[in-house]
Amino acid sequence: MLQETVITKAVVESFTAKFINHIENEVVIVGAGPSGLVLGYYLSKAGIKTAIYEKKLSPGGGIWGGGMMMNQVILQDSSKSIAEEFSIRLTPYKDEYYYVDAVEMSAKLIAKAIDAGCAIFNTVEIEDVVVKDNRVGGVVINWTPVKMTNLHVDPLMIKSNYVVDSTGHPSAVVSLLSKRGMIAQPKGEAPMFCDDGERMTVENTKEVYPGLYVTGMAACGYFGSPRMGPIFGGMLLSGKKAAEEIINKLRK
Image (cartoon, rainbow, N blue to C red; front, side):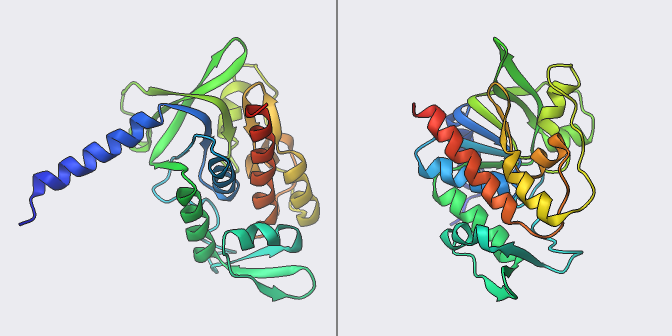
């Protein structure tokens, strides 16, 4: 006979074990959008202890809705090899374009990251960062419903060697430092220009403060590069670039 209390204990015990295991990490990624998921996959595949914290209920960022709720997204040749590594089905469209089912892409990015060993904690929001000796060394977390309802509940702290702002358009993590005058204010995204936007997303994927990286649309928002709409190749390439740099630094 199924017992309600056994079910409850299983949920609480298994989640608590996962949570405790990730109080200390090598890398914390804030935001489970495409760049964050790709980053989490490559880091975890390389044996880097990684956790992603996503404030929404569903990981996947802006992929799910496709273009204006038509759930297809576009990739280009430069990101084809990454998509294939994630077993995302690509349908050619004209010269250098591929269209992809947005739901499939979201699901496979999430599944591959988890399969590689990356822990994803949804409905968790970053309230602040930990800074010691002028270096980011972790994040301060709380439940998203606590933030939404303005409850006065103290947060908890998570340690990491690197923190990555993959929060998308808000550039939420770098904003925590910029409002204190520790780094420059985010410039905000420039008007749409797909070609420059895709290229500069990757170029602007970098460490912006000791221990703090930006990827994807957070890099666009911080450095002021153009937005690009429902084309996601730059997001995938951004996540892979950040992974390669962080792995190199951690494994020196």
